[in-house]
Image (cartoon, rainbow, N blue to C red; front, side, top):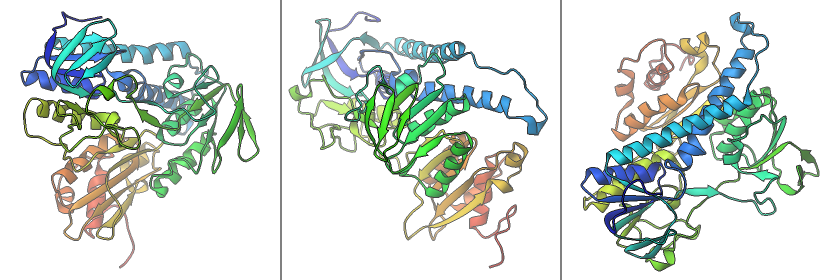
Length: 454
């Protein structure tokens, strides 16, 4: 399907209409480039339709349900609270559809042609569509993202589903096994546990093994409270229907088995062999700091060029790639790419908290008025800074960490100091006061927490 009449020649062809792709197309159009997006499925890609937005939508619903049924401490006694799984599913689908239509409207408003088709490179200046048409371009941006990685012996089928299908269930399963223990597994496992599902997570080492152990310990403790069982130092060996055999000798049977062991770049069928684009040893497209591939006519952005596989990285890279394609001198030089895990509590990270040249200060939620009022004191904030007081990294483990981390990102990007943050008035009572409190503590002038005599 074509939203308009497809021109034979364009300034820019964007392959992939996900968050990185449509952003790059809009920016290119703003710069005067005649632009076409080739998207084989839904505009907005995985983020809007299958991953980021759906997961956070369902997490919100699960949180609401759980709070309604666990609020007696506040004097709220709720009886006969139930979940209508079909309505929950419909809301999740409607949210994605609304955003998809919104992206299509933005493209139309910016005079961008959207072709719903599969694109394959014929050369460094032409793309073949499955409908038989050929599109010639001056520049192209590959924004095809990633896809679920299949674990050997656990190929996706009627018994084994991936994270996308786990976020499209129209019923709430009584039991679920999740193979993998990264942030996707934690988010999906926690949300279903709050809806009443018995969740087992199979971890090769442990959940969130690449993250700060102190932060992860709080998440693990909360998961245990919710009834989630984590099988550490264990691998799945085989499965028979809905029964999974583990390396420990145990076996687990569940209504739903989810394989969430990672993502791989989506390059299959792109015809890159017909171009000068090259891949690295892990199958990601090689690019330079300006997001140019080894083919002078083709750029690439987002998941398909490597870690971190985050939507907001793709969005920023989409803007830069469009400017480079338009002839501007630009590069992806952001100092910080924040990461957020929508666990319970949330974990948000900006910059780094390691290295001999940095010091770290921590402030607990147990000393924050807002957290105490909401009975949500499971967490802390850490700030890393150098000998000159420059902020180098921040980790927030808290409710609303996703919103607060942006202040840390801005601080690091702009070269802010501890005093800059400590002397900035933060509204009270809010979770955002954590930034001010920890900065003051790092300056040896803590107010609301006593660290002891020096």
